[in-house]
Amino acid sequence: MAQRKSGPSIDPEIVRKTAYEIWEEEGRPVGRDQYHWLAAEARAKAVAASMPKTALKLGDDKPAAKPKAPAKKPTAKKSAKS
Image (cartoon, rainbow, N blue to C red):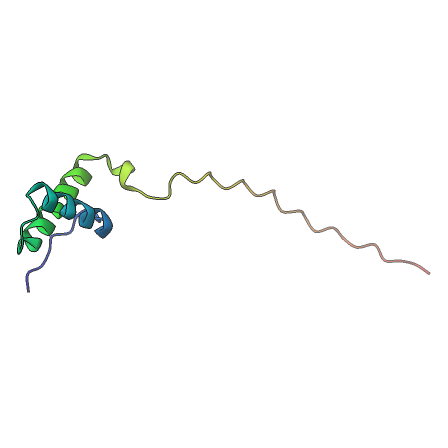
């Protein structure tokens, strides 16, 4: 089994849609599904490689968490005299 090179993680849904677009562009030929999938992966990897690394991180659009208030110092309890 061939090992794949590590690189940017590619969303399979993007590859699927791109492969479909390639298939349609070529006139919907029969029996070229693997070629279309590999071509779509290559396109997606090329796009990902051309993007800055900071753009590849997902979830960075969330606002930063508010800083927590400093912890209160424990105070000595006064004993109640009866």
